[in-house]
Image (tube, rainbow, N blue to C red; front, side, top):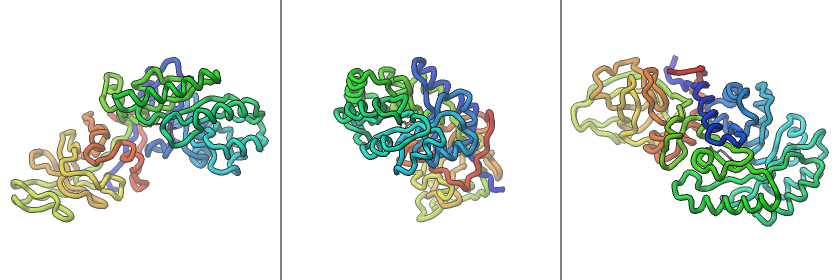
Length: 366
Ligand SMILES: *Cc1c(COP(=O)(O)O)cnc(C)c1O
């Protein structure tokens, strides 16, 4: 069998969720498991969390129905609401909660007759300028929804553009706008994503919405004592499948991007962009071989990548290679660090792991 496996540590997932709860003891934390739980497998992650969480959040009704069909009974919030009015009977049938961000959604909802009122999170645009009503529209819509028999448990929801940055200037503008509105309406709030959960207690509302931190990635620009307690959930592990010695000056891989500066030992690893490993990974991108750091040498191919193991005499065929996450010996290569070498963020690496890579679920990895 091909040795590339995404090991998913469900114990670490629960640990990270509980850390989010400890950061915000006055809030309830909905576990965001959209995009197949950021690539980790939504049904398995939801089962691991179900006894701990009051609710889950997903991006669309297809994701919510997959959870219901997978046996998940806790409330599920649709973060972008419905995409067409004909989804409302399904929202009703599956007992979902929904965001409302646009006038047409309000019209559809108030024209619908659900079997029981639907919990609604009214989305206000406090400065992200993506989804939601502006602050003035939101006042009128709020009143309409308060009066609508189709609606229950109405909350205000907003999303931050810069909660990860250590400069709180724009974040504070957003929070002032939304808190002034909430005060005027006497509305319960749902604001905080992972960085706001971790770093901005002022943003903690009745509900928070941590996502990426549940999977062990640190979303903050500058790590702190709390984020250092996060544990990686996905460990993407493979093995060395071939080794070769190269003379000084010899190139490796497509276009010969990497060239040996000395006599070098190169290992071939079973993992490539056809698995979702980022092709933008530069020479020097770290990997762990038997728990020790080595570096990518040469362009990532579809099914393989090449690393320089000249200084690691013990590297051999079958040696464990960790692309990110924890080695079986316990050393950790943070996905955030790998993302930095790929000019991207942990979110794209984790959600980018393709179906070809088997997910293997364990209660504890190390
Ligand atoms: C994805 C998402 C979140 C979670 O964000 P993280 O940065 O992963 O914590 C929260 N709220 C909304 C509206 C989202 O779309």
